Image 1 (cartoon, helix red, strand yellow):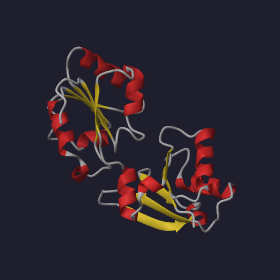
Image 2 (tube, rainbow, N blue to C red):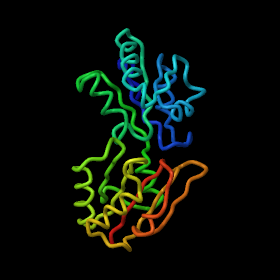
Image 3 (tube, one colour):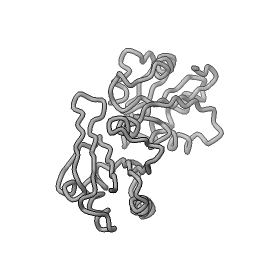
Image 4 (tube, rainbow, N blue to C red):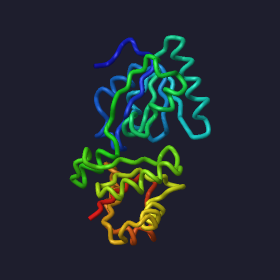
Length: 221
């Protein structure tokens, strides 16, 4: 149900296709006076945005979020568009860091690339290890990746398109003792016209490049 009292909405907009945008997401955007999101997310709501539109980039993130929150403080409803689901490598964490954990924030969940990937590959993702590098690559995250691989569970990974690509991940896992022939799947551009699912092995992945919009699945034998 749409929450009339909340002034800040963080909305999951799905993995990319307008077919995967939920009706409640559109309804919430239509009522917002300020809508903030990356260009790709804003384009999904061209016919729904009635108020001010703010394009979010890596350079203007802090400034844009601060401005939007000021508008919410004035009583205007603000909608932040988060690719996929806000609660998984989405906008929920960075926005809450600014407004505080106790702020009146309405989260509208969305369909994530993780969910779309699991559906394409018929994986019960409650049995998989989910690891995201979208918010940075550090020793602890890489350690978790290596430890998870040794458990023998499927790994569903969001690579960093620049700092920790699928080829980097494959090379790292092999260096940590994973078998070179371990099956790997790369799901690119999920739900879009150019969607592709590439099936290979760790050793093959090391020499290939993939779209920044991809999910990597490692299935230890």
